[in-house]
Length: 192
Image (cartoon, one colour):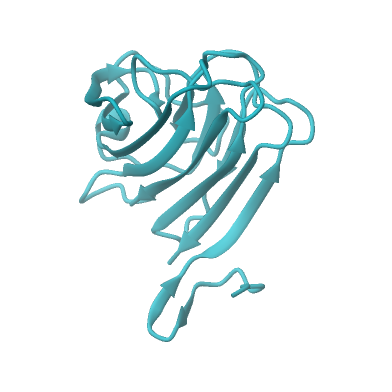
């Protein structure tokens, strides 16, 4: 099913997110950012065929309170928890005081050789709510590491964006080193 109208719709009683923005990286860039429309309460970010230009890197997320002019990067602005697994390990990684949110956690990396990279979905709840439940993230991503041997999958819960209840109006994805490679696709969907 294709939705051409960016307004939220119901399809047979089911919520259908509207595609609000799609970014196809045609030349390497340092980051991909999105301004969040204020009339949506829930966002889904789809990441497809992400490959960094630098091997052995992560993919990180930061938020903004000023429409993307600056992004929160204080040493304790974020906290996150990740449960990751592959065929040989099941592990939790976390950070209770970080300058960004890691999408893959500690102790793993994303490869950039042929057949390596990351795909996944990031959910963002309550970004514009200055009171009540804090803005928070969840995600499900899979990636092939820099050795090209191990496929990781993870499901996460990321809470405490900026450590308080604030209004978030922009978000960005950036690798821990290097650039986002050509062919990477980032899409933003919204639900009202």
